[in-house]
Length: 151
Image (cartoon, rainbow, N blue to C red):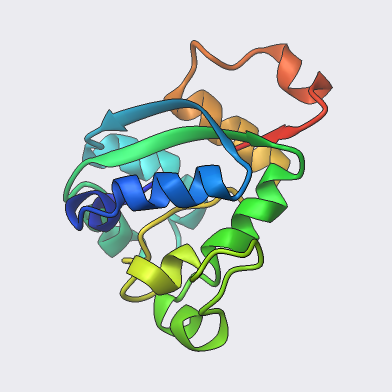
């Protein structure tokens, strides 16, 4: 998902080019504006953390672009491509992604650990849940049988 700072900062097309150049297919995408309830539900696992209210406020500050990406080992490759959660650390420790891109996405366009431009599923099960969250009509039982991962 491209977060509000990525969409409002005009990074969407550049990020999509990096995604495709890194061997992913963009199977589906949806530009949407999250409200407080939807953002809270999406990040429910963080609801007890001190940063949760700020995260929800940030995620409702502008539109997000949710995407379904397809590629073998999609989750791990996407995590490598986006870099560390903290964009400031990414600029120092991961200026180049693990997939031959000039920069990790967060090093390229992120600002800090919250305004880091993109979200990445941390596991296949998280990816399945997150795809269902935004693309209920797209997800089927076939995900588990594909010879690739989706996120």
